[in-house]
Image (cartoon, rainbow, N blue to C red; front, side):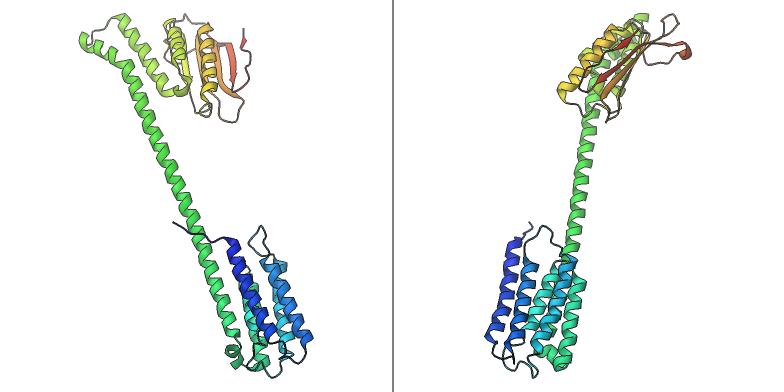
Length: 350
């Protein structure tokens, strides 16, 4: 279980550290030669820190604010050290080194690491010019550099951990979706197998009982059963009990009926799907065409199902099993219907 720290607690902690530096400066206010530049440095630092810690929608610090912090760091260092030509002595008058380090840590934490390094680098150079290399450790400039390095490393680690967490979350979501899809496929296969078994078992028993010696009526019934099983595979959601009944009635009259569900109505609600299928059953039952083709329309269209009825010049002996006739070029459109997803439309018949 991950534990997240509220942002306001971090801001309060940083504000306490910043105020502590100002307190040290106030305690040592009598050490510098002149208080004016010294107090100006305190004011500049307070302004920069307040602006950096002010709550905003974005955690990434604006570039102008980070640049302002670097400029304030340079100004504060010059204002303080110019009034301490002989060094801070045993006082806290060199408060600026830790204060600048804190300000640059805030800048680094808010994802402006390059400018934070520029700020502590300038502090190190200014400290060496002011009191020599020994002052890097003596007045805490080296500590400020270390804290910026630590904040940079933590920011990089947290960013890397965030990317990994997003990748793991995406992988988990994809795995869950894959599992749901597999379970849906298994359920679909079981449902289709059960539906096919209920339809085919009685006829299979008759075939076994007769030893395969079927009458013409039984053979015709087998062909109709084959078409019904094909509908269960290719028609999918285009089928309900009413559609099955009307399709079978059409095939017994010698009409060829083809149902093709390509997933275009998977997003319909149960009520909308019932409306579409009942309309489809009504159209199929009332059509006098020799061939009827019902096909779902891809997602994004206002139409859910298209129904086409064709009349041919043959004698009507074609089987109603989705077979194609040899004289397709002579077919005439007897029915053209678009069943909408929401609003009913009028069939165009002739």
